[in-house]
Length: 508
Image 1 (tube, rainbow, N blue to C red):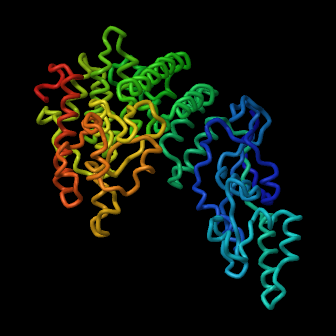
Image 2: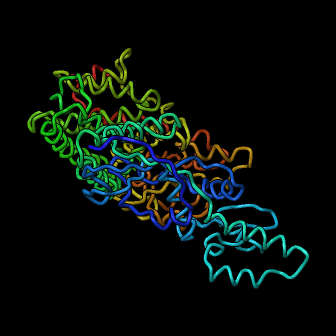
Image 3: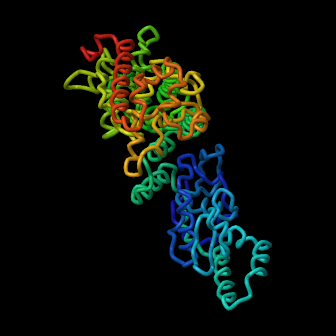
């Protein structure tokens, strides 16, 4: 390998955009993660000739796995992808549409307000010669015209802005990955997922792209987008040590060991997804708020023999973990504890003890459903309670199961409350589950009227109190109290049916 060195130069924005393509991104690079709202600020910085930091490229004689396969002789973009992609998208004006107001010298993302206000011009049009010629000719012929022209020309000059460039030559893949992680750690911009990906890509070239990214795409297509590469890596580390409790980083494994552990993890993850679908009727993660909930399920499925898998119990553990907000705080610590529990002789018992180590009781009480829609854990537990009762759509009577879009319906409409009490309508006890189109047909109807038309069995399936005297807005608090009790009873009945007593320890 040739001697490593750094070469410093500059590159104009127009050339940077022209030369950029996906083939310049190495395997360990993350995807595009910038929020669109950062785009106007980047453009404004260049407009004002502020520094936007240097870009870092890397050249090597090695064959490197990139986003589109194994390649050599490529000038890899190590740091600056977010800025380069933003500039490229602004030039296209499709995914990111930034507009400029010459009188205010202001950049914004295009929206309905800018579309209906004069003097907002698309950056993409200003940067396009033909479009700019039309803009130039249509400028109002008044005293402000010279200033507007000068400012528009200044926007066009952004394409000639010289971006500092540092070019690494002769450095190894591991050195490039180390630089990548150091830069992003210092900027607090790189998350755990990206660091883990980078480490693994440096040690086992091609694995992240061929295995991890491929399976993440599968999970995303199946609606399980909250199951991240970090979750899968955590489960895989557990599988790699044969469920013995101690774990080694994946980048420290031999390639054969890694491949074997990953295949088992992937198979178990598919099984976990299918369990959530079959046991709860959920085909995506709209209600399953955290991928952490699936990690112990994956670990359990990967390390237990088919005859030793009590699938109803492991999904019941997931329900309890949701009810008790298992991963709402200190998620990593809780997950470490639960993975250790999975290595025990009786993993389900150990997992349940982790949830309620002191009282030993997993029994739900009405207050567990006393929060509002922001309580994602209790919302999932509430859905599981209703699902156990055979949850049916209030208005069609169809079972709420295996649906892409499960809507939340306010039993007492928000509009029925005074403004100072309107937030109370978002309490969980005021929420029912319906299909995506049903809510529109109800509007702001009074529950005292529309609930009368709904079959009693449907109301029971959503734990809605049958006492009609409570269906009035002035008795909403009593209605919610009664419904919280019914939800707790349904959840506890689900536990009684799903968990053997030896694992619950007199919990239910």
